[in-house]
Length: 245
Ligand code: URA
Image 1: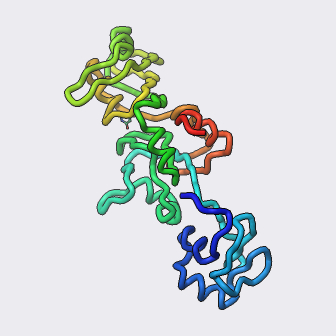
Image 2: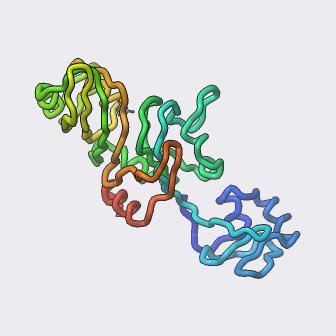
Image 3: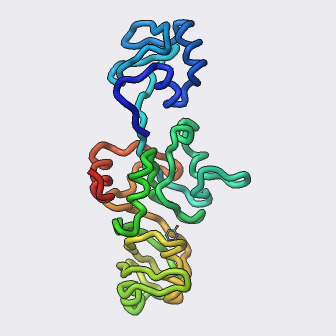
């Protein structure tokens, strides 16, 4: 969502999902809104986004674009809403949904790790575009003994009924007869891609954790379910990966 730097106060409050235009008018009349410390009695007045706004003494966050990273926990759907199941949007304050903040792609319900959210539809779209080939890295625990044969299969790319996968990188971390761990890097985001690639090599995924998305790594300080805003540097790196700017 973008907005001009100068706009009507009621329009700003409605863009921020704080109040409808008529509610904004009432709030202003009651003297509840201050702009740079002055009461704004008329919500149709034009204001600058550089000003400081308060409502009932609380500063208003006037950022219209938001970019977040979450450490998605297992057991939560990647969806905007669901009638029965908990979704990743349920883990965010409601304002993000009303501001149009959406997950960038999907992680399966049982997959955990780095999930990005953005209000910028173009950025979201470009990050998922197969043309950009933005890499995603996962740590996987799988059944059985991983061998170099699987490394080669991942490297060659694979053909499935519905899609072909580009070459991917498989690095074996531990290999035991019953269970192995590995790091996988893919450059696209096809449905159940990592699980299907392992399955094609005879391994079932026991757990999957996304540790990076393009240039961004999961912040280890985020407990499962926690999120934080991207820094300016992270956003810039992400935009570059998406071929924007
Ligand atoms: N590949 C999968 O199989 N599942 C995910 O959640 C992500 C990538």
